[in-house]
Image 1 (cartoon, helix red, strand yellow):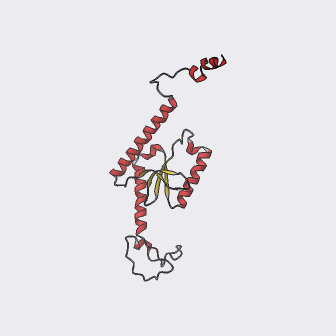
Image 2 (cartoon, helix red, strand yellow):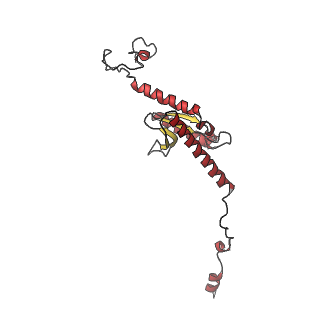
Image 3 (cartoon, helix red, strand yellow):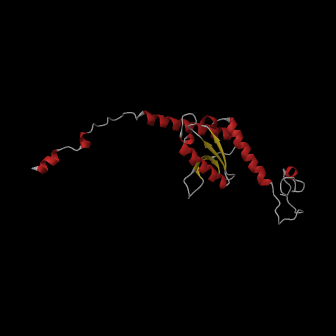
Length: 183
């Protein structure tokens, strides 16, 4: 008889009110989806501005410190090691400006610097502007110019037959460059 009673008693889950179908998600979920859609639109506009200004398109969400960490850059140009981070929540006490998130970002950016990355930071409203595209274009141009410069090393003679570069007049061969340590 006790078995019958146990079987006939509904479980707490069965007694819980049923969720009606086709009910919109809670506002927080809707807000998160809206923020994500806006962020995707800003990235799309940024990429379009890059194309218009003849700036190579970035890689989205590039993992840069594998396997030690799962850190990603929001946007990255891999070969010149330039990254663009979009720091949201500056005015709403978001993750990037609160203590633990701020400290974690410091670790991330310091490690990126150790690995040779140049990290630029913008707010979401700054992302899809010509100013940001110009900043990245300038950084990419500097990388191109620096790759043409051949710095003499201690093992090379000063009379090497190196190919002259566009910047050779500015840099020189190390002679007479005060403050550069003979480099």
